[in-house]
Length: 146
Image 1 (tube, one colour):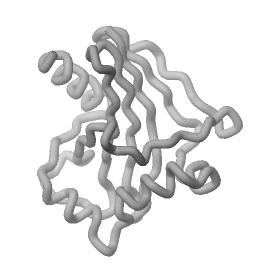
Image 2: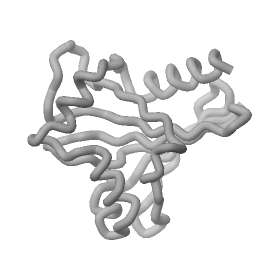
Image 3: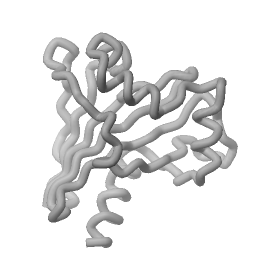
């Protein structure tokens, strides 16, 4: 089961381009006064439909992996979007990625992925958020199954 989790993390990392996992320093930097606090953003994103719509980059890529095979991504249009409730982070595993090649932290650009994995580890769902110009946005959804 640990291997499946590692494979899924690698798939997500490579599907988004080359990324380096960052340490807890990124959490402190991205939640600094210059940047929007992710937990507060997530709560507002979950509770306020209009806010949520304003923080999604449409058309939103919706990608699926079956095993290690990537199917072509579809795009979700704004008019087809259904409101998500994601603020219960007890059900999600949060992973941090730095999306740049260098080791310098860019205060205006961070990525966080909320991952929801089924209890038998056969299915997963990832919501990828990007911090850009001090504001969080949902930029991609990735689904996977065995």
